[in-house]
Every structure is written in structure tokens, then in C-alpha cells.
Length: 68
Image (cartoon, rainbow, N blue to C red; front, side, top):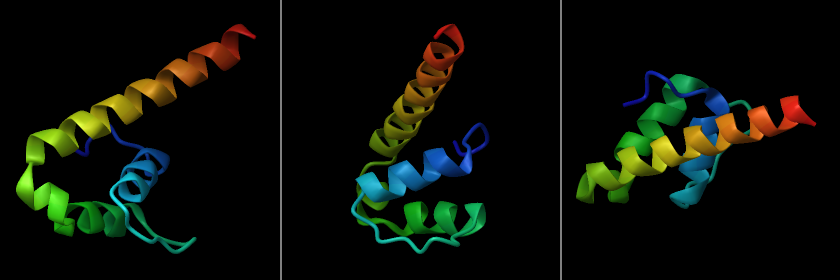
């Protein structure tokens, strides 16, 4: 689930879930924060989709920047 994620993707997902993050949070910490979130425990599929959409949005933004 987290294999193709970049740190920025995990950061966005954690913030969307209402988590407060420090500036120096690591990828491992972000993964644990997301896994411990109540929404992850209640609906893993929702979190998987949220991560997937976040990755897709980032990739689309990167493509748009390359075209400009």
C-alpha cells in the first residue's frame, strides 16, 4: 500500500486524516501515523483509495509542469 508513495504523498494523506505533523517527520513515522489513525482502523480500503488518488494527483501535476 505504501510502496509507491513519496514522503510528500504520505504527508498529504496524514494531514487529510487530521493528523498534526512536525517538519522533520520521517517516512517510517508517517506510515505509522497513518496506520494508527482511527480512519485506517475503521476503513483500510478508504485509506488505500486516498493514497492512490494523492499519488495520481501528484503525477498529473508533475506532467502538467513538464508540459508548461
